[in-house]
Image (cartoon, rainbow, N blue to C red; front, side, top):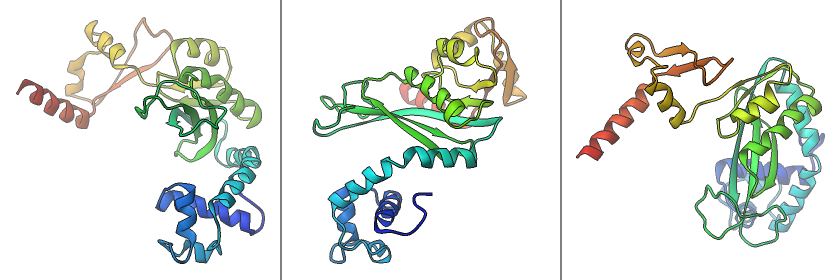
Amino acid sequence: MIAGSTSRIRNLVLGMIIFRIINPKSKLATARGFHEKTCSNSLGKVLNLEKADEDELYEALDWLLKKQEKIENKLASLYLNNGSLVLYDVTSTYLEGNGCELGKYGYNRDKKKGKTQIVFGLLCDQNGCPIAVEVFEGNTSDTSTLGSQIEKVRKRFGVHNVVWVTDRGILTSSNIKELVKPVEGLDYISGLTKASIRKLAEVEAIQLGLFDEVNLVEFESEDYPDERLIACRNPLIATKNKKQREGLLQ
């Protein structure tokens, strides 16, 4: 899928992918890991990359970037079908230096004060297989990325009937109303925030006594019209919360 035939640039990309899985490091450290005198495995010898340097690795990434859309289209044709679940989430990573045009100051998940960052969204199939990734400016809000992803799946991938699975930080009430419900063939699965769950419990929309007999409860609420709500009792979370509560009391 990366390239039709074996070549040095294909081996460079393949080597970086494998290194990212077994021993993720910088491009400089990855290049040194290929060299005979500084290698930590036989990967450089197997792929004939023993003389590769970091500049060559960056050139290979530029080459790969030009093939991104073609690779994503192929993955989508293999793993996405009408009726599929589409898993989508957003994260960010901070940057060193100031050479990235997309680098902006924003909500920093890495807790790195004074660092610019980029935001990226990852789209996967129902088994978690990555299909596509898109990078956004570092000050992009999570909610504003969903529209382009829906358009990508429907127009570029040609898959019109899907179920979007993402968190409530992305699939907000306004996004559901404006981006999802008006489009025929789109459904969604999401989670509620702790504050929303607490509010439902306080008005007894969730009858906690039902969990004495079953682990899953389906219910409705006027606050979420036309939505099917399901509450799940997670014994692992219950045990964790119990320990935390006891620790606070002590």
